[in-house]
Amino acid sequence: MNCVQKCIKNILITAFILAGAFVISLVFQHVFEIQERITTLFVFAVFLISMLTDGYVYGIVSAIAGVLAVNYAFTFPFFKFDFATPVNVMSAIVMIVLAILTSTLTTKVKQHEALKAESEKERMRANLLRAVSHDLRTPLTTIYSSASALADNRENLSTQQQDEILNAIKEDSEWLVSMVENLLSITKLGAGNVKITKKPVVLEELIDSVIFKFKKRYPSHDVIIDIPEEIVMIPMDAMLIEQVIINLLENAVQHATGMKHLWLSVFVISNNAVFEIKDDGCGVSDEAMKSMFSGAYVSKATVPDGNRNNAGIGLSVCETIIKAHGGDISASNSMNKGAVFRFTLGMEEN
Image (cartoon, rainbow, N blue to C red):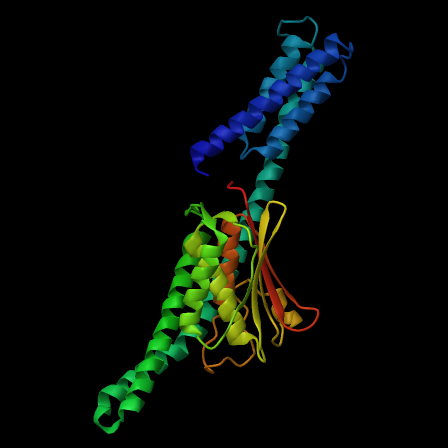
């Protein structure tokens, strides 16, 4: 929200609360013939404005406006300003002092919250940097070593050996591309200046696209699909949601030790589409579950290639994308065996 929008919002809040206090005071005075509570009502209105607006200006302006309104419309002589009476002067002073104190307190609280949020962001950036450094080092080293071996000893390598080296370079390169895409997504969406563009997507087409891309990378892993038979339309950014599902499927392949089956289910509850990725592997420890989506999570399980681990980054990306869509994502261990990752998307565009 930019400065102009904040200013308009604060002005509307101030005007609405003051107008409400004025109308209620008129009702008190002319319907219920209650006079002595009107000043208290405006004091409360000033307190609310100071709490709900930014800075000192709106609270102080509302205090002055409240003093003038009470003095002019609700204090004898009516419809005439009178600041000669000590009671009126004291009411004015109390309201202005209250506005200043409340605005000061709320400003300090908001500043503290902002510092706390920034500190949390810095902590997550540090975790992200550590995870990225850890995850990128080995595949880059492998690519360099393999390329050097191929360049320096091509004549001593058989065709099969050359093909194996080239395939290894290709796989590591594909993994690095996936990692960079994840980092770009989490950076852009985390900055808060990228608006998600949602378009209605047919669920079956989305799942077909996901499985096609997943099978290209993991041809030996089958995914058991369970989706509604009827046509389901979900507003989303299809590319980003594909990225989420593929990240979760890859996470199971790379970290669910002992996994034999992998499920992808989608079901509709009320106005939400619930996506569920489940495996029958080793599950997730309680300690890892606490930092699952923070970017700090690093699985201790041995991954198939023995050197790559992008669980922290991939899951952070998943959370960022789902939150940007207005949904929720969670992880838990299955009652029987394995882990369950679940996220929801609204069926109605918001």
